[in-house]
Length: 178
Image (cartoon, rainbow, N blue to C red):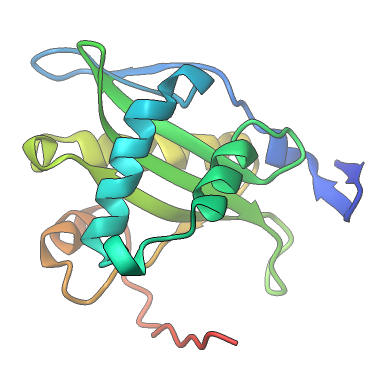
């Protein structure tokens, strides 16, 4: 159930289906699929929009090294980090990044939905929901019994969707940069 990497054991589920397309019924077809190398310019635009939404732009922008490394991880079969994009009529409307990790309170892998973003014009049209549901399917295929994520307390629009798709855990997140 595991493969070796330079850093130790990597769960085989980390390599879970990096291919495959899910078509979601909407007025026009919405395709949820793994990101491809040719998506870099469009993905980068979405990624920059996501980071700007959370105040990471201009002088507070992520270092290019972080973005470059994040992009490379999507294509490394030993990395537990995955990316899906929402495409309609050849245009990327949204992205989600998720990863698998072990837990001390269950045997199966946890799936952490780390990033979710849609362009403003796609909000409220089912794109975010489709991306989350695609992560649910990927987690199930990997044998992960749990998908979780966090959002900022001011992200009320997204929270209305999240409240329909998951249960709020009640846990608060504490963090400190070291």
